[in-house]
Image (cartoon, rainbow, N blue to C red; front, side):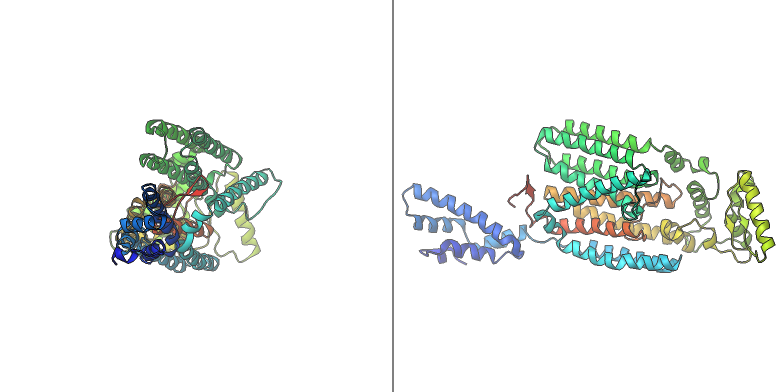
Length: 510
């Protein structure tokens, strides 16, 4: 369209702005672009008026100086449009499908199978909803999710403290899934608070100290050492994301000073977490030194390491019935170490006399220091599923896949997971908006570190309690919240070019 169309027209400005806006595919962005262009036109028109032009003629000349409206609108549309990520969405759907497949395949129990689908189906729908409008809604109403997250953390903290002292117990506040998520939630909340005060020195330093203090209080009042895997994932996510934001010049202060303060806060928070339960470090690095009975997580690590070492590249592990029985009772490990820990058969207790004899034997073993399993299978009926650790359906998805089909199958799944994170962080790296980048990065880090700890546990190096494998292992409520993390991350990537970000409570120009 020629700029001559705006010549001598009293509606030149409005017509020009409408023609530009018509080229913008993302409609909610049109008013902001029109307002910005109108400001430029008014500034130029004021300059012409000061040179002696009439108000009307000055506006027409200012519009003509802007250039072709369609060209301008097309260029702005290219710079401010939704960013598609079909590969990441497709791979996310594939991993969710694998999770549902595993949930149905293992059939660990009817409740487990039903529970898995119960969380997968609505979780997937909520994931799509967050992808569709999560980040734009957050940008417009960022105080509401911040207040909701803060309230959730405070209620969780209070509920755990009261329950620990026998004063109050709530299944909602003390659910392990909520505990896992509460620790992870501290990371994105922390990033949002630091971003809020990124240009104010005292407020920023106060925020860093406040986060460290809240973390120490949280760890002190809600120790729940089994959730340390979530705590480690949250700390690493927060620290890495802060360092990356410093590298992107997000904060208005000297980089070296910020790196030093961040490292000091990370070491303070990390040492309070790790040193509060040093046995987890020993179990993680040297599980053999922490095995006492077949119920220990460290025993599960030793068992998985041994079984994986006997599994070929192609085809599942091949064990005789006698070997399966030895693994099932724990005799393969405890026969030469502590025979009291070997499982005791509970098969064939048909009479009251046999039941009493069994209970007497169990009592004798326990009084002598043993803690054996009750064995409900025989050498003729024992299978691979009888010898695997408890909750293998959820905690050892990769290891079970290797044991069932060989190392090639397990490495293929690891390859899919690695490709997923490669695409995920590739998308994050291209996010231009600082708030969008920071929140997407911390959500991606929360997913990544859970995965790292999960994979290490599947190869015999478990740290504290198992996290879920995001999207793949069932995890119930944790899976639901991991879908929120992923959905928000993808939403931030899709909208980072078209949404305006809040600056101290106001919306900044694009």
